[in-house]
Image (tube, rainbow, N blue to C red; front, side, top):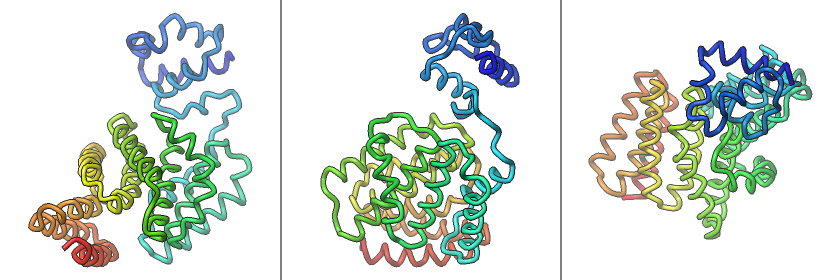
Length: 303
């Protein structure tokens, strides 16, 4: 327990936070409790531990006694898999497969449970997207979905699970042509929950929430839920401004044109042209082709 208290104290001081500032209004943690925790005199509850981890902007498992720093090479592989969508690029897909093989061969067995969940979800997401077959992700979705539906706050790994759920639901909808009303309500509720959390997410994790919203928009489109579509556009633009990362802005503009095609064709056409212009600025020729194809399909679907 002393190790935990010392770790909390060092991390707090590294961030330059005094105890009163760290505890805020003391509704979650009093200064007296924090002093006792840091001295090793008091064992925090799981809820308190999560609060401390949130204030330190770290996953709660980092504070566990048996936590070990993740291997640098594993962190490099994970970063690449999280930040490099392949857009159907065969060479990139093969590289990602090699990275997954390396993780499973060299690191997976020694990873914490939460990290194993991240790797499992990343691999399932890639397989579902590469094959357009939801079967590769359904076992994971079935394992986690009930728990996710009962949560109002989500961890990093939770957002990956939700992204996988959205992808699988979209492909299931495409395959059978409809979803049960209960599943539609469940989808809309989960999407709303994600939107409600956007402004509360640490900036460094917003790229993941953005990808979750992109994954859920397919289902919103099929459900013809224009209000959720409009809300998602607002959240995606907020994320772009907050992170100053405009690489995915052509996709955001694509989402916008899908909304405006139902309400204002001229604005939709303007968003389509803006999306292509930004893709050219980033030199992404594959994305330009994808945008052209998507625009043609949307014109046929909505006009």
